Image (cartoon, rainbow, N blue to C red; front, side, top):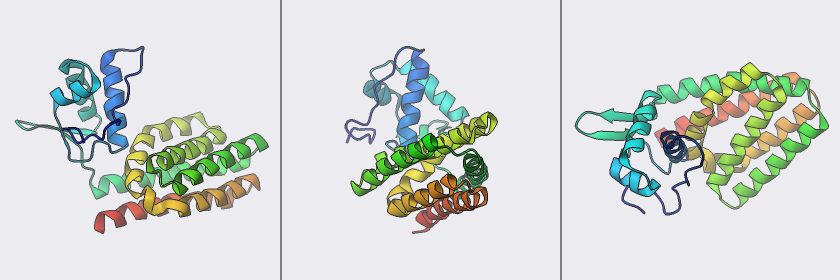
Length: 225
């Protein structure tokens, strides 16, 4: 482990081109959402700058932006810390996610086509492989891609834009329960694919609502265990 608590190999390479402060911001946000940087963890500018191979200035700017967006807390005389979400914060966001994704599932079923179904099945197979290999990061990534595909198949740009606003936080909340949800999550995905393929809008809506509700309950149960 590095001195900031980052696993070796966890620091993403800064993508080029683009302003350095934006690339540092994206790198830090990725480390937070994947929980390589844990909620409550102290973020030391000099150490982060060293890991990312940059000066402290873009790190400071990135931390200020992350603070504005609620990912980082800046405490007077103490420094920066990864935000620790409250139960209420998580509940509110996951409830909104349920509303958005249930509607996306309905629309996806209404406009189902063979190419879309095949894409969902391929993503589901990759997710199942990740679970089988106990690859939590891989399972979280495939889960995000599966839900993004449902949103794409819904064909509603406004709905997709709203979902994109909560996607990063959904990943943040899903990561600690991904192993617990495990195979069951992908069984639910398979059931959802079947409903979409059957163009059964009501069933797809119900299954997605139940699926996202299971994740919400798992998150709260984790915090009580």
